[in-house]
Image (tube, rainbow, N blue to C red; front, side, top):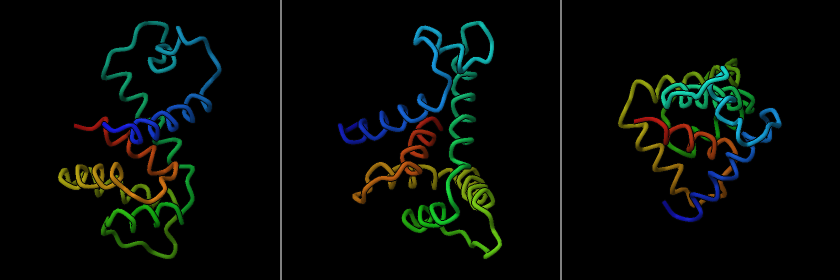
Length: 130
């Protein structure tokens, strides 16, 4: 990982932490576990993923279309598609095409254009996929 990629991910993590409840850092594990105990790795990853998806759903329709075009995601959009419909189409497309996950992950990571928050958040989310 290069320093600029790390910086982008730290910014996105900072944004996620600012949107979460303001708690002591020693209790961050509880934020992801949903219970008072220590979260399992898979539970923490799932909770992080769900939280990230919830934040992604707040992006505008135009941002999703711009993201799809910038990263050559070949999906047809209708005039009536909402931002969440487009997000769902992109997520379904990636879920059905494992090789596209890697391609989009690389495209987002190595993009020379100024990165926006949508790309940063998706980059973090895609890095958690195997």
